[in-house]
Image 1 (cartoon, rainbow, N blue to C red):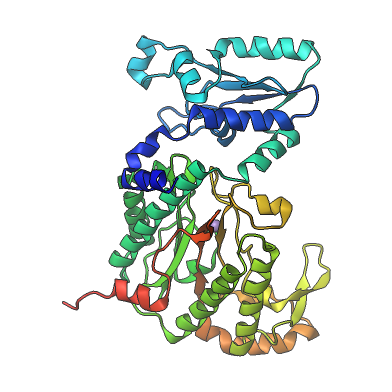
Image 2 (tube, rainbow, N blue to C red; image 1 turned 135 degrees about the horizontal axis):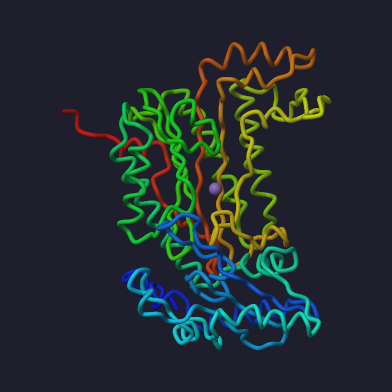
Amino acid sequence: MTRILLLLFLFPALLAGQFTPGEYAARRAAAAAKLPDGAVMVLRSAPEPQHDYLEYSQSPAMLYLTGIREANAGLVLARGGATGTVFVQPRDPAVEVWSGKRIGPEGAATLSGAPARLVGELDRVVDSLTRAGARIVSDAEPTGRRILEQLRGRKSPAELALIRRAAEITVEAHREAMRIARAGMHEYELEAAIEYVFRRSGAERPGFASIVGSGPNSTTLHYNANDRKTEPGDVVVMDVGASYMGYSADVTRTIPLSGVYSPEQREIYGIVRAAQAAAERNAKPGMRSRFMLDSATAVIAERLARLGLIESPTATYDSRGPDGALRQARQVGLFFYHGLGHGIGLEVHDPEQYYDSGIIAEGSAFTIEPGVYVRENLLDLLADTPRNRALIARLRELLPRYRNIGVRIEDDYIVTSQGLEWISRAPREIEEIEALMRRPTP
Ligand SMILES: [Mn+2]
C-alpha cells in the first residue's frame, strides 16, 4: 500500500483514473444496504448552468456513487438491488463537435461498474418503480442525505490520497503568496497568484470562493470581495483551498504585509497558534472530538484574559439576542466566534464521522481552525448595560492597540491507521513565515 501511494505522489497523473469501478460499486452496495425497506434511491446529476458556456460541476452525490461528471445523468439504486443502474446521454458525434466527447452508456458502465442505460429511459423506470409501490428517495431529502453523509464521513484510502494532493497544491499556493506579498498590493493580486498555482498544479478550481482579507477585512469571516488595496502594517487572512479531482482542501494563513508581525499582531498570532496546537494534541484517534474545541477555547480565553481583552477566562457579558432579551454569553466569544473545524472532502464542508460518533477515527479528514478577531466596531456590538460598563471601559482603552487584527490559522488533517497526519504543511510559525517573506533589500 505504501508503495502504491508513493507512486501516486511521484506521478500525480496516475490519479486521473481516480477510483476503481470496484470502489464505486462498493459505495453503492453500502448505500443500498442502508436504504429502508421498499425504498429506491434515485439520483439525478446537477442541472446544467443557466447561462451558456459556464463550467459544469457534478453533484457530490452523483460523483461519489458513480464517478460520472456529465450533466443529464442519473442513478437508480434499490435495496438489495446489487450494483444499481446508471443513466447517461447517448454518444452523439454531431453534438460532440461542440461540447466534447460524451462517455455514453459503454463508458459509463466501465467507469462506474454498473450496467448503464440511456437517460431518456430514466423517467419511465422511475414511473414504473413508483407504480410498483416503491418509495423514491433522492439525495435532497433527509433519508437519502443521511445515508450519503454517513458513507462520505469516512474516507477511503483513495479519497484520502486526493485530499492530500489538494492540500499539497494549496500549501504551494500559500508559499507563493508569502513570497510575493507586499504592502500596496490589492487583495486580488494575492488571490490571482494563489489560484494560478492551483490551476497550474492540476487543480480544477478553488473548492470555495477564495478569502483574501486585509486590515479591517481580516476580521470578516467570509469576506471575499478581495478588492481592497493593502497598507503597511496590515495583516492579511488568506483562507483558500484547491479542488483536486473534486476533493477540496481548506487552509488559512495570516501574514503581515510588511513582512514582519507587529508586537500586537505577534501576541494575537501566538494565541491562535497555541490554541491550534492544543487542539492538535487532542485530535488523536479514539479521542472525543469535543476535546479539540474545549482545549482551543480554553487557551484563547486564558490568554485573552492575560492581555486584558476579557475580564477572566470564564467571564460573561450581557448579550442582546434578536428578540431583544438579554442573556449571559462568554466574553471569549467576542473574539473567537466560529466553529473550530469541519470535515473536508467532495465539499469544503463535508460530512465527517465524528459529527455522529463524537470520536475521532480512521478515515477522517478535517480542519482545525481557531481564530481571534478584533473588530473595529466591537464596542457597537455590546449592549450598554450596568453589567457591561466595566468591560466597555476596558475595551475602549485597549481596542485601539489591537484594532483590525484578525488572525485565523487553519490546517488539514487525515486519520489513517498510522494516526493523525498534518497534511497542509505551509509555513505557520512566526519565524518561518517572516523568513519566507524576507526579501533582499534593493
Ligand atoms: Mn474551513
